[in-house]
Length: 436
Ligand code: NDP
Ligand code: HSE
Image (cartoon, rainbow, N blue to C red; front, side, top):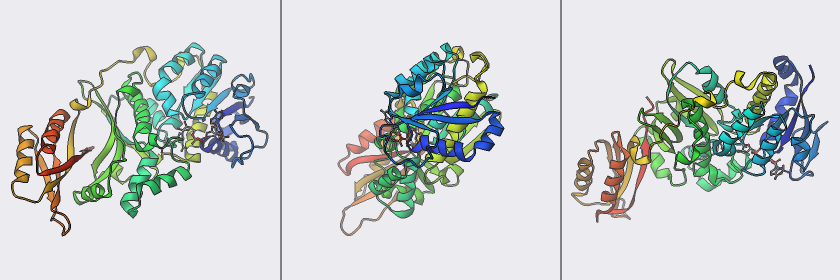
């Protein structure tokens, strides 16, 4: 059979990672795919930059049309990132009848509905395993492996950069900015690293996971997003004292009354496997009715792990090339005309427990005031730590863990606590999930 010809749009960390895997494992790959896979060309900005991947036989160009309009190319791999020119180029490749593979979660989360529609029209596929959790085949697992289940919720550590920062801060006491710079140097971070640390990248990935788990259209704008930039070493230490780890988590929950789609730092009991997923590693825990909980773990970013997902998608594209679009696994797991537009809950409707850190005057009655406010909102306290005052401060932190409640009650309680004369500044609040 004739080889599958690939054209890369972008040949940076991920593009080269995929090319290295394709070259090193060429024999294994063709034994599996039944055909050879060969890289014909790659589009870059700077043609003179030194590349790690061997470029023998690869045409390097700065004109993307050399790839998307080349009739010889079967599969276009988009690893440029960003909205444009990526979106226009993919639509052009699709219109030219090419299958496309992308690692661009921002693009899929925000414009996937449009790309899939175009792909169906032209009888090609859009594959995006690399867009979520780097090297972990979690899309395939949920979309195909769990196809017989009703999925109840999923929770994932789905941004490698944030997990790397939180781990290094906790284990080595390192500074946020230093670790972020290191994650950038290692090729883990997004072109704009605020996407990583402010939770936007994780929200892109959660949008995709929620769609394939629940059969809903992609709804990035409905995701509640909080990043890790306000997490301090102090909170990490108090969390440990209480038997928890702080992780940046994406959660998608089918409550029965609507979906909770949320991304935020979260205290998780340290005995949970997912609480021990450290560094750039990612993990996604899926709770489904037939199989129960399943956990998918592996490298969440980096050249070859992400390249591994890209290569698997290229092989799938090569295999399905001859199948009619209705005979392929649907892009979002459910048939495109069977997607349900389920309501997404607002943050005040979320149900969760809380960690609160409150800086108070060290005087009698303060704790009683706080307890009364929480009691008035029907919020039960599960644990309290009250620290001794230090020699240089008259204020002490009180750390509280609450039971589960509707978040609107907590918002109201926090406003009242912050208004107390004995409380300094704002209350630090981090959600707590048992993931049991
Ligand atoms: P890089 O910055 O390493 O690579 C981007 C590539 O695109 C470079 O080769 C660059 O050219 C080229 N490029 C950028 N803009 C243009 C343009 N306008 N025209 C032509 N070429 C262009 O990014 P990554 O490989 O890290 O990321 C690529 C995608 O993969 C992103 O969507 C990212 O979110 C996603 N991703 C990244 C992961 C990672 O671990 N890094 C993991 C999972 C997904 P040049 O080399 O000349 O600069
Ligand atoms: N910047 C992303 C991360 C890359 O750190 O997880 C993988 O999607």
